[in-house]
Image (cartoon, rainbow, N blue to C red; front, top):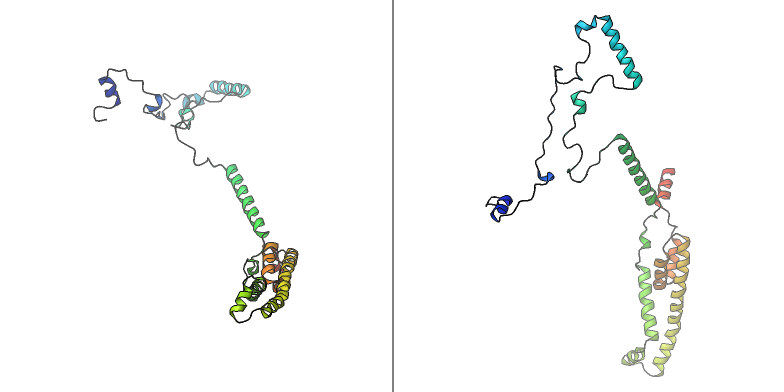
Length: 250
């Protein structure tokens, strides 16, 4: 605030300002002072001096102290300043979310094992998929399309209510029109029965060749016996793994 900040606003309205929380106070890191002379750090240069080295009694006393400390499990020498020093903010407080883990060799190995299992699972799942085949698409093309169009027109004309009127407009009416319609109804009914039978036959035959029964049932309904003949000439679908094994053995 240009008027002096929040504390100044408290003073203007004659209010007692709240205490500053600890998290808002500036942080200070302790300084590491290394004593190279051994004056303030008792853990450094605590050995025998040059004059004491030649003293056998002093040497024996120090060795006895070392053996006694070793029996009790105590440290043989006091800690130096570097050992007691704590790195600033090493307690992980007020450092935000942990985005990157502390990687160790064990964690890296575990992550590598998990990645290897995921890759192996993906390869196994891909190897179990069937190879793509253009005939497995739900589309009626070529001779099946011509057969479907012809059958649909013939059945619609043979059983349609407006067929007699259409024949009358063409100059054929009366008994001649009815006779022609009765004649066309026989092949139309045969085509209809053939479509249903071909649909069922195609669905059963497709299941034995690892193909989609629904797709070939629709193709058999629209394409009739031509769809059954087309399906009979096709090979059974194999998986990607079987195809790769066949290529390696070839």
